[in-house]
Image 1 (cartoon, one colour):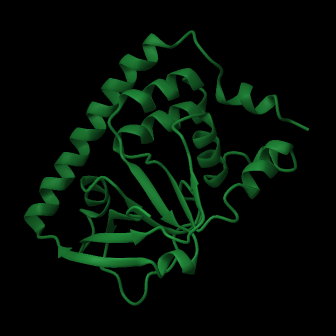
Image 2: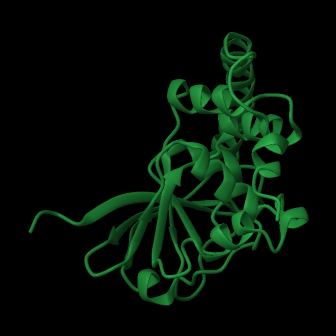
Length: 213
């Protein structure tokens, strides 16, 4: 059997206290869980404005865990839409039930991360200003990492902390500037991609209407 461990990063606003648990805000991209990413810089830009932020390097052992892996496609986007509460109007439809059950048996969910560059693109898709074709083109073109979300206590027990690094105020200021730069670059790149795909694909509301009961 090959290596089933993966190195990931987690940013904490005040540092981890006690055992790792699958707890977060419920309206995160893949629901409540313990979030980790392949991109070291991404969690840094999320916590750099906190009073005492920490960056953790972790190892997640996937052996024996049930893993749901999302490709960079519309299924990924609609699962995020469900978890962010964007599908409540369609509660009771086959579409809603599908995403309500999707991942319910998974210990870990893996997919592209809606980082500084993709966050704005997703919001534009959900608000109906870009199509699914433009969204998928942005996913393919923008250099974004993946997020791994431990959804169960079983998965969390297979996470080990390899390094714990407290950030200095100077580092936090640097990462805040980097976060703003990444967001601006992402918006500019998304604008170019969306203009190239403006007449292709379907809008968010058009996709959902096909599933209305």
